[in-house]
Image 1: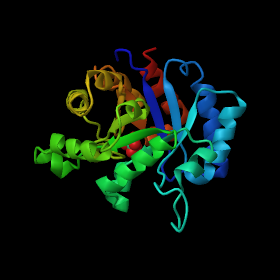
Image 2: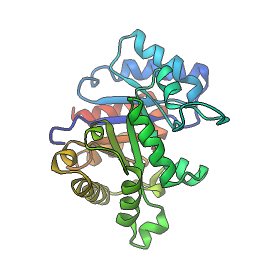
Image 3: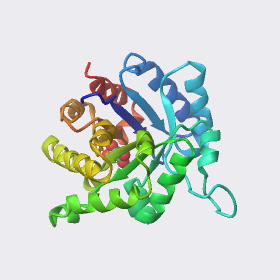
Length: 258
Ligand code: PGA
């Protein structure tokens, strides 16, 4: 990973309770202590638990950061059920996911809505993890690059060169998420290389070289090191395994190269 600090995110999705989110955060804090300097470690708890989890990391103090799984692009007003970027930041978030495949395919978010969210997150001073990735039928139809290109071009529309310092791209093939099926290191590398090439076209070599592109989709302690050893894979976005302290810590350790 030349000059790029590895990034490992733990996406807790709609899991945990008030109590279990607290104990998971404490466990992650202790277990990831050694690798913290070498890896950007960020956990994404459900929004009701953001404040509690953020306060645990603050009280340590710990280098682990807290992120939101999703935030809405409007600043305030009549948007029942939504959480704004300002509210997320107020709860201790420094990072946020945009366009996770479950938001795209379960909730039905469009590329345009995701772009609005990306821009609002960046304008609000957050680091935005823009998630992209193809469905199984799209991969089988040979459309992997086409889908990633569309999601990236629209997702990053009107995002300036300087703002790219606060963007992380997560490549998450939808068929690999929560299924136990991981992309082979070669397939994942090919997609990451394609995405980096697109960043050259959309921005320049420097932006492409600096931007972290992380892989998500059934990353486990047993496959993390091989995936992270690929030249264009700069860490991971971890779902299921982020709910188990030991597994998450082993993945963070793999990203640190230790
Ligand atoms: P998974 O989820 O690790 O459970 O496959 C990854 C993700 O959705 O970010």
